[in-house]
Image (cartoon, rainbow, N blue to C red; front, side, top):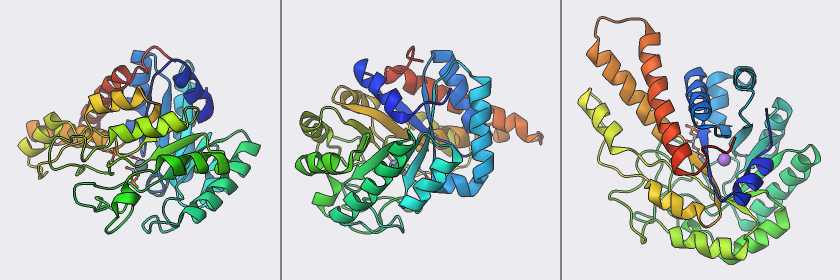
Length: 328
Ligand code: G3H
Ligand code: 13P
Ligand code: NA
Ligand code: ZN
């Protein structure tokens, strides 16, 4: 059944677990997540970015998620819009049946330029007012994702801030978070702690100077009732990087957010953990390997089946590690 983000995260807070929010664009990713959810008895958050809606088309995405709910009636499903760039984009998602929307007012409508605090409060409050009127949850974001190592937004594929960010922009201010939550009424708050979107997050295994897990504790202490959200939370599995390289891919040395650090976040109020890149890496690795190992095969289902299984295994690992397993 479809439920709102608020319903799911209230349950997660009560029972002290986190929920991975996986990005979905196509049939295979949705099937992988649902198979993993059934196997581990986990509730799911399926989230679609603007890029996903452009890729699949809004009717296909909506109908595929409906199909997931029909095939997996025992699994609670939140259908969430990831990184809404404007109130109008959030309204479109609400009309389309999403049970939760993110209004990312940390960036301007171009989804690149850092926005002022007042702009963020303004657009986020408007979305909360509209969404709550129809029972839809809202995630806001305070602070900009980006690298504390380089000071750069850290994303070259067009998702997230562009250019150089100051240290202040890269870390959510705990006192400002108190004001933001009280003025907007958001159900969940995405915070900036040094993570960035995509595969290239850290040039080494992150330590406290470049991944500010302690910041989560400071924020949670001030707004204990607000569900915190970690973006850019792929762990970038070294095993999948190796498979991609072994089968002709070119991925430079890079490190993600260790699962243990996410678990520490979950102990301090993180309830939603956004993951896209790990599924991309696993699917790409599995497809490269399948194509490399059977060069005469031309039925794409053979490759896509391997990709689905690889993505499913990533999801099973995260459901188990975050304590989501058994909570459906
Ligand atoms: O926000 C970042 C997610 O990984 C979505 O990426 O915009 O390429 O769909 P996307
Ligand atoms: P990753 O790129 O680390 O998977 O993050 C995804 C994300 O934050 C989507 O909003
Ligand atoms: Na989101
Ligand atoms: Zn994100």
